Image 1 (cartoon, rainbow, N blue to C red):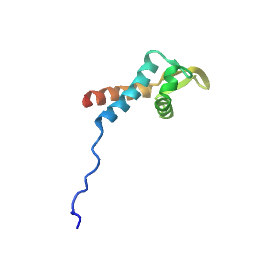
Image 2: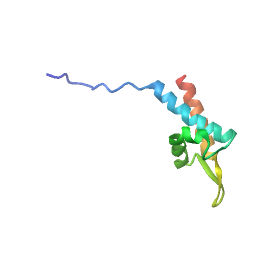
Image 3: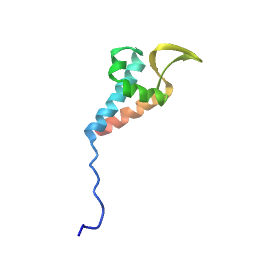
Image 4: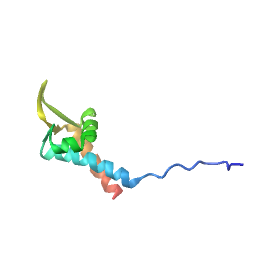
Amino acid sequence: MEQLGATPTDDCDLENDLEQLMAFWIVLDKASREPFTVKSNIARKAAWHIAVCASRGLITTEVDYEMFSNQWMITEEGLDFKDGLDERIEQLM
């Protein structure tokens, strides 16, 4: 007969969590310090993270209303999110 009680869950993978947070942080940091083109090596290597950041409004190619560039740049929301990531990464280290 199986034991009754709490069912254990998978342990939190802190190493993978930190790796993912760092990948987002790198994209945001790069976009804030030195905007990168949509066809750059970083854009190719970090395509998934860039897609997530762009879909959440953390980075954009929009320079002005309906005017776009070929570079990813950080938004105000992205700067705020990056600050939060700084705190979270610090906690995990």
